[in-house]
Image 1: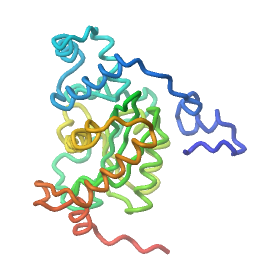
Image 2 (image 1 turned 45 degrees about the vertical axis):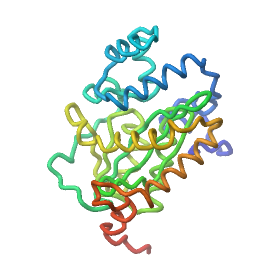
Image 3 (image 1 turned 120 degrees about the vertical axis):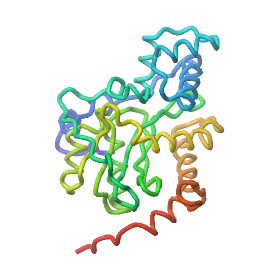
Image 4 (image 1 turned 180 degrees about the vertical axis):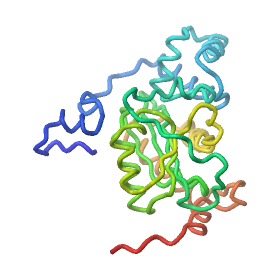
Length: 277
C-alpha cells in the first residue's frame, strides 16, 4: 500500500499527492446483492464473447435472457466493472479532465523483443459474494505477465504497486502503453514513467485493436481460471490467480509464439539488463 499511516504527512495529504480518493483508503466493501452479482457476471461473460457491445446492445441481450435492466443501469455497471466496448473506448474509459493524455506511439512499430513495449490494463473479477479488480503489467512481445495486483477499489495505488514490482524484477521497457483511464493519466503514474525515461503511449480513438492482446489475456485468465472457481475471499482470489499466472508464464504454450511459453520467448529476446552501480 502506497499510503503510510504512520507518516508525518496526514492521510488526506498523502491521498491528494497520489491523486486517489481519501475515501478509498478507508473503504470497507458493502455486500453486493446476489441478483446484482449474477447480472454483473453475465455482463462480463457477454463482454468477453462480444467486446464491441455497448450498453444498449448489452441491455437488449440481457433482456432476451430474462434480466430486467435499463440501459443507464447497464452503463453504470460497465463503469463500475471497468468494462468498455472496444469501439467506444474514449467514452467509457473515463479519464480525469485535468490529466494530460499522451499520444499513441506504437502505430507501425515492429514489436519483436522483450522489454520493448509493456502494456497495462484493469479488469473485473467476480467472486462468490462480491468482486475485485485485477490489474496486470504485460510484456507485449512475449505476452508474459510481469506483475499483477488485486484491489477492492478502482484506484491508482494498486497500479503503481504492480509497475514498481515489474521494474524491480525485470528492468524497464522503452515504451509503456495504456488506455486513457484516470489511473494511468494521473501524475503519480505518468511521473513514475517519465522519471525513468520511458516513452508513454496511450490508446486513442480508433486504436483499440493495437491493445487487443491484453483483452485476450483477460479472456484466457477468466475462462481457464476465474469462471471455473467461486472465490470465497480476496486472499483466495489472489493466491489462485497468482498460481494461474505462474502456469501461464512458465508452462502454457502460445501459438503466436511458435508454441513457446511467454517465459521462454521473454528470456530469449530480452536485451541484457544494465549493470547495477
